[in-house]
Length: 237
Image (cartoon, rainbow, N blue to C red; front, side, top):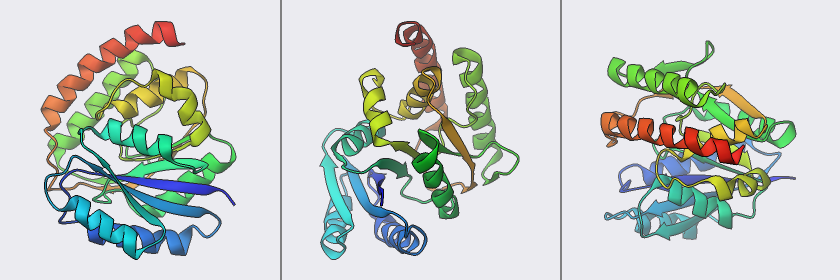
């Protein structure tokens, strides 16, 4: 029986953490019976009571654990949590559970069998998204730029719903430089160029209206990072 580790990165998420983790626990218990699993809450420099709630949940439930990083950065949190995990498959999802969990088993099954990486995608004909026009436009534009600048085939770089074989991640880790939101794009691009098989799972995705990400500033940084990644790919692949 293979083991999966579901990482939930958190930054000041005291309002939703308890409910989201319990929802995730209930789903895994009912729908992932062919796997061993645990949930890792990766507190990423929170200033509110996120860490205390995470510790309480880890005491209440044997399959939940909490780790703390003083430095912020989602990429940093994922790399630490995935590296220290003893699971066969490591994954992550956003704490707001914007992606419908019904897509999780299929994505994991693909990684457990004949793919190295699984990603949720909001940009295929079988996907469904509910989000503001502005954010939808920026997201689609960014993914188009990914294709144009680094010449990739995968459809959705930034959906917060991914899984990867632990062995594959460790093979890619020396090439992963980003410690923030660009890690997803960096990892997928390098993996694709190196010939790893990527499974795309169409998802139902509902926008979190309480998101604190400055989408425009983040997108501009992504473009700069894409150009740097294109230069790096010459040495990596």
